[in-house]
Image (cartoon, rainbow over all chains, first blue to last red; front, side, top):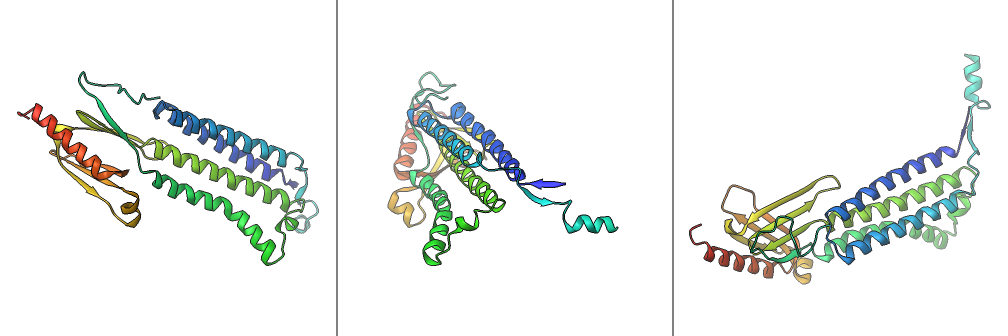
Length: 86
Length: 184
């Protein structure tokens, strides 16, 4: 069994999912219960722009990485040999 | 969205006097904490680079450690961004509205807990102002406690600007409404 660094990517994607859901909850609350004012709409728009820019930046720095690089190769490790002895 | 100049259950002769939020410094103080936490990794990087001549990026350039380090940094900044926005939401949605007849309190306590309560000005017995600390005194913010006639717990306007002026206005409105309804 080979454990690759893609596990870091899956952890990051889980984080992005939480970030996305919580951002939506915040925006919903501001739009539902906030005042109909320029400041409120501006803050929501600025946040959406910053969050989208951040996710685009994250994609651009993470996409060139080879996520198939192994962290551990259990077939070659001493644990496998140890298990074979058992 | 809620209209600033209208209430969903507005009474025939009721007028909105003002809406109140916490003083800007309260948000700024907490937001500044997130700014400090956001620049902390950069400070660490420059500290190691200029004091010890160690470039952390060289250590993080490995095929395994590099992506791990990158994901960690990205998740850290993502959390900072989300916490800052949640802080804004929490502060912005705490609003106290004073009308000519009542006080309406809308408080957001976390993301899934919203408390809306109201108090008739006729039931107001006592208004107390509390300004605690040097910053509150210099910047002019404080708490206003409104005690009612009933057993209901007292209303609190927390960390609002110009608390003395607000207390005076509540007392004036209270006197006006009691003069109009002498039997109550």
